[in-house]
Image (tube, rainbow, N blue to C red; front, side, top):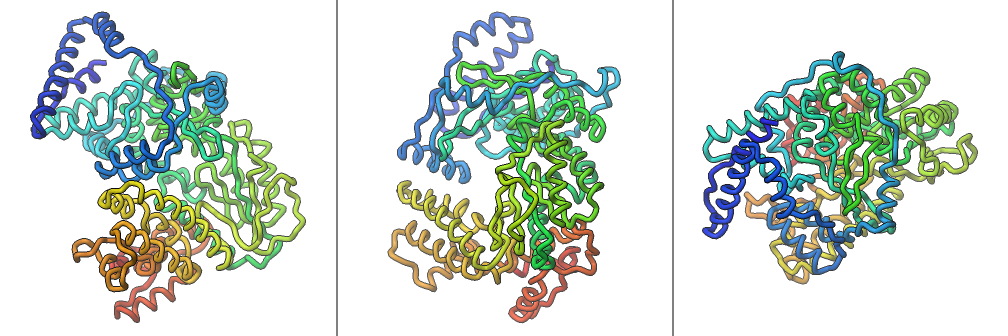
Amino acid sequence: MAEAVHVLGMQPQIRGGKKKKLKRLESLRAALLDRLARWKKGEYVDLWSEACTAYPVQNRPAREATDEGNIRRAKECAQDARYGKAVAALLSLGTAEASEKSVAEMKSKHPAAKKPALPCGESEAPVAVEFEEDLVWNKVLSFPAGSAAGASGTRPQFFKDITGCPSKGQGWEAVKALTKLTNHLVAGLAPRELAPYIAGAPLMALNKPDGGLRPIAIGETIRRLVSKCCCQATESRAQDIFRALQVGVATRGGGEAAIHAVRRLVEELGKNPEKVMLKVDFSNAFNMVDRTEMLKQTHEKLPGIYKWTEFCYAQPAHLFFGEELLQSMAGVQQGDPLGPLLFSLVLQPLAEKIRREFPKLDLSVWYLDDGTIVGDVQDVFKVFELLRSEGPAVGLHLNVAKNEIWWPSRPESDPFPAKVERVSNCGVKLLGAPIGTKEFTTEFVSKKLKVLQQVCSKLEAVDDAQIEFGLFRGCLAYNKINHLLRTSTPAVLSEAIKQFDGHFRDILAQILRVPCLADEVWEHASLPCRFAGLGVTQCKTIAGAAFVGSCALTHELVCALLDRDPAESVPSGVAQLLEEHAEDTGLPHEFQDLVRGRARAAVAFR
């Protein structure tokens, strides 16, 4: 592992900062370089003995959720502009200790499985993809600020620091060394004895509101980096594989496209009682999917990343939960950026079979493990039966009680099992968006607003106006409902938009410590910061732009899903919005120009 040692040795000179911090960092740097020098001399046993003495294995203590502790962690994250993590910390219910009960639950979420069969021998393995230095560097920079470390303790920030050295020459040498290491790993050349550790992760158990536990695994930084590079290198090929069948991987706006497609079918066929929509749900899908099939599909469809996939998944990986050593033996591993792609590869043959055997379906689309099937009742029921009979062979087991059927004119009788949930004809929630009547949408939004109000109520306890405002604008303002605005017409959301704008106005008044905001103050606050405003966007000003922008982005994909001609199709409601925009601004635009990006008219909506 000479490449890894070389990367660790690329320590930049410490510059800037307070003197005490500088002195401490210089000491750490000197100690690290000294250890690397001793490693190169062959003093492995002595270094290991010293490390075990200095850093004894300790059980990660459970963290109880207290308001004081949550607020403290939220402030720490907010000061680094990690607003998403700050809000998560504010709402945290804490972590569970590694008790007998929690260990049993973690084991149930990571079931035992046989060692996967390999599709080929080592000598027959395909040639691995090779990464360029620019790609590796860009993926290093793509790690969010404050990203956690895996079991080794190496944080992504370490790679950012060595590649971003003030001395460009030294920084680029680090990039070269890191590129050499990633190419070494993706080619499957690392010792197999390291695989359970490189592919392993420390495991935490987050308490869930319903009393259960949610496992959170933090993968090794180098493993995440290699997988990020694999995703980028295979993006074009993945688009060709999944096009118009799966929209959860390598597809921009895929979830929005599925929602727009269903909404259009409801407008056209909603009064036909012979139609039905099935929402498919699998049990613990990502942790149960079959690794033999995963390796087979990777070998056939994405051979350039096969060796890396085999390295990570051909044997169990270690999951460290307190003092317990669990094994990841089935499914894709949490914390692996390749996970969604590998899962989709396993699902693809099943999705293709559905499309092939039921050509009269109006829609068959998958967003990772969420399937949406629309068609005649009997055809959709046969798809349900096919999934139930053939899915288990590749680790996909239908969770019958969580499968849903819905249609605006659905009759009372149907052939589906009694356990399948029958959703009220007035509307359904699909991939986080409401589809149905205006009354259903208003009620859906009211529930969403109530949850948002509960979250925002915790802001007051932070007792720091600047941090409160950062959290509000960064995570709890219009961006909290951006998905809703992009997937629903403003006409359906008219009442909801008023409610959200009223809520945002009240929260801003609370942060500013004033009883209420005058109309002119609220309008001023909604201006961008460059115009002396606060950048608190009002929903009423962007709702039309958000919806038109989403329709333009996903238009060709929606038409592919529905087998329509993109040149002859315009989404419902878009023409009226463009007309209103032309009347207000005197700038007319054609929808097809927006789709092609020639007019760049989306800027005018901002």
